[in-house]
Length: 286
Image (cartoon, rainbow, N blue to C red; front, side, top):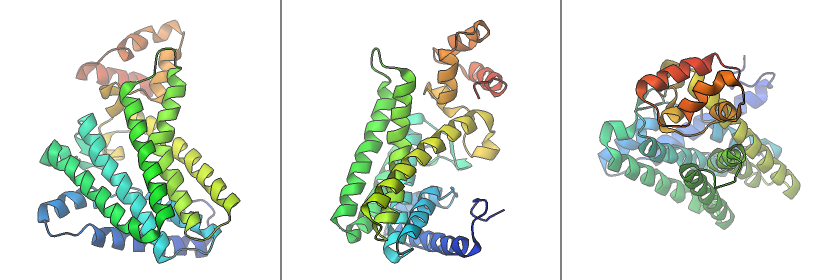
């Protein structure tokens, strides 16, 4: 199996991407350094805890459609990862999450204020790198950030009266997850000089991959133990956040799902949440 997890990838391409990812790790580590030890410690907390580096890998892969990996492409890949990690700090505060990437969440370890400010610090470090990539890159990041925020607000507010909950959910997923992965691909193409049509194809592909990535994460949230996913199982379920799995149950007209529908329509106790997770793991909706 490929070290990248990509079946059938050519060894030359794999080696180039692995070298690029190594450069990404080095720049990530060096760029979050600062004069205040606590900020450096809190910033390193999630970055060093691991993660798939999926967004940087998409940036590096997209650059292969143009002139390939350059220092600018690596910088853009780091911008995308810093942006992603910053949103995790903020998400964990909003969700009151206790675990992230198999370690204590920053809000659990240092409190909400430090977690929020660490996210802000990482956004500032991303902006610092971004400034060297030119106005077009800055504008792209601004538009992406707008979508990230709108997606989070839409998730918090829920669907409007008369709006299909599933369509609302897919729009939220496109904004919250798809947008940054689309931008990761666009950065790779843009900074490697691809033509306009290829750039749009890469961007569209990135968004679709991002949506699929989130749908898979919804399944993992229910199906996996914390030792596998690095997060508490059913985190969204406990917060009352709809996912593709729970929306299928709520749309079901099967009488055997009546109890599940009743439970999913209201806040759950810890005991009820554990019961629902076990039931969902055996359900066709998963």
